[in-house]
Length: 73
Image 1 (cartoon, rainbow, N blue to C red):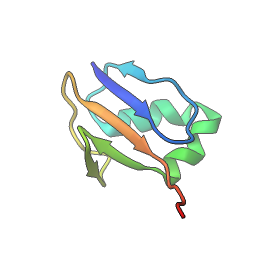
Image 2 (tube, helix red, strand yellow):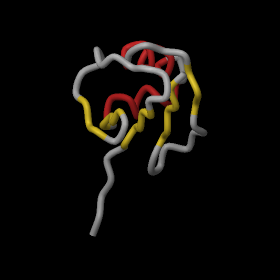
Image 3 (cartoon, helix red, strand yellow):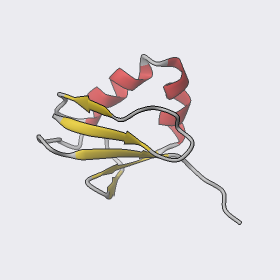
């Protein structure tokens, strides 16, 4: 099981899922209308390391974080 955390302005509780790669996560999250836009614009980290591919293999205990773009000043 992996833990999916949504950071910043994404107003969604963490999820615990039985998935094996980020492609599966994308499919699950795209079923939620308000998540589709966040998926297009957010960076993704697995165990606090940014990743660029949905083919990243996941193992039990991994933490996935969705990091939306932010502005600072």
